[in-house]
Image (tube, rainbow, N blue to C red; front, side, top):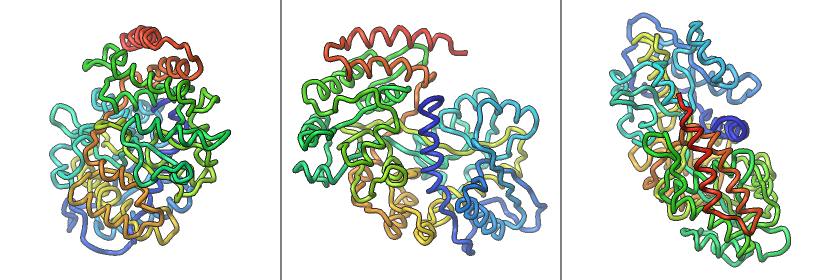
Length: 457
């Protein structure tokens, strides 16, 4: 997720998901998260990135309350938050490292982690993570993001997988069962036709095809079908495959044979969100936070939307964020930082998983993210707490939650935004030209992608 789509989606993720991340603790006592002993030892001060800015008053207050609660449990650790926005800026990352201004515990997108590790810009925290409570229960596909050559370099804050977001109200109007969302692409096509038949302006299934969003969703659909964007060494394109052809052929047929996708195409992020919020769109691919954005920013209602797994998928395009450590951080700072991350982001009932407080202050509770633990003991506890304090209809996401533990997350490919821009062309072509030649479109995109991939440093 970078330029173009990243501007909008990263705001959605960093804003929408940070709502979950800022749920905070209740400020009370309780047992300390597993951490280095803080008895009579010397004080250690850590700087931590991605503190909510003062303009985000509620989240800032919750962060400060969590810091106070944490420091009560760990009186020898001082947490100094840094609220620079954006939380990570590739253009200033190197300068901060060189100038000694990089936080001890700095924020990262999943997509940047591998480059940071390869460049030696993060500390190896392998000797210390064993003391983080729940560490062994974290999803292995998520932790693989922060691992390299058997070493660990960070911990996650958020993780999401793609799903099928659908309008339950339209399903009912079209004679479909909203509690049995489509599980195959054939079922998606049938449902889309029935929704489009409701009348002028109704669209059964919507898809992006411009501004790099088309290539992004091509990747999501490709992964879900078991395809690959690039070869294992990352040096050549691999999407000109049976799975890639199936993605485009399915969209072509829904657009031109079924007439279920509407005539307006070349859609970008905000277009589908507006259509979903306006009650005219039946289905789209998206992470669960789409429901929150549609409700908060596009006049939708939580009750009207559901989320199911991407049809026929065992792999999902995933994303998220987390924290890594300054390579100059001392062992004491690393241990203190891990204690803070455990308290704020990884402990059921505390920090971002304090759903009781979230409900009390009026935040939506019940959306199925972040998914850090899967079907483990902490994961089950988080799910229970989420349902106990739910303010949105959790049953609307039952199909998504039920399959979440069987879905393996897969990150974006190298040179993602450049590949996405290339793949906007075949995506837009099949949705705007009935005579689009899928084989030729993929061959042309493959040739362009190979040139981009060959230029990697």
